[in-house]
Image 1 (cartoon, rainbow, N blue to C red):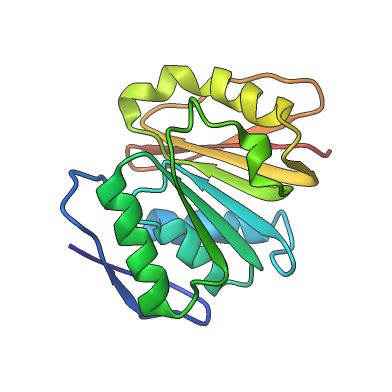
Image 2: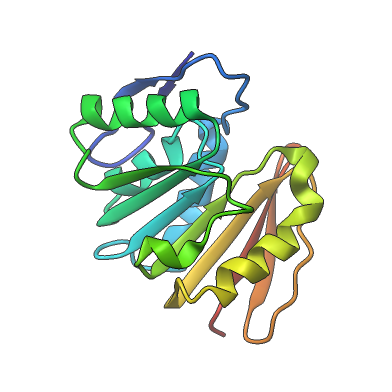
Length: 183
């Protein structure tokens, strides 16, 4: 399977996705996500964290659209290897760190970065585990002073934390639960 970067400096470039049974997010949902995000936060000079990265396409879109650095966390070794290969082919290896790890057991403080956007696209069957993972992420101290956390799923993600607001966008059967830490 091939996926196309939809916008930015890498627009129109394709990545090859290894056969791992992944469910890549549709291009129209990716575009809508970044358009929504653009209305909320400045990209330039910011860090992007892609958890349950799969193909890595969100990390690539982030770099293409102006984020300085992107981190991809993917548990599947074959998928993580595919992301690394794509960073080489796209010429962005120095901007994308690929971490082959399970997000639920990862110590996020080892990333040694603050993130302004965190995107989670878990297997939909894990949706009920997202509130605990969001707490772990926020409590780890990797969240920037200004941050947007987005969870993709087949239903809304319910999560409440002091200082965080939420809005939800729906695209067909896909929900984006968008949490942000400013009013």
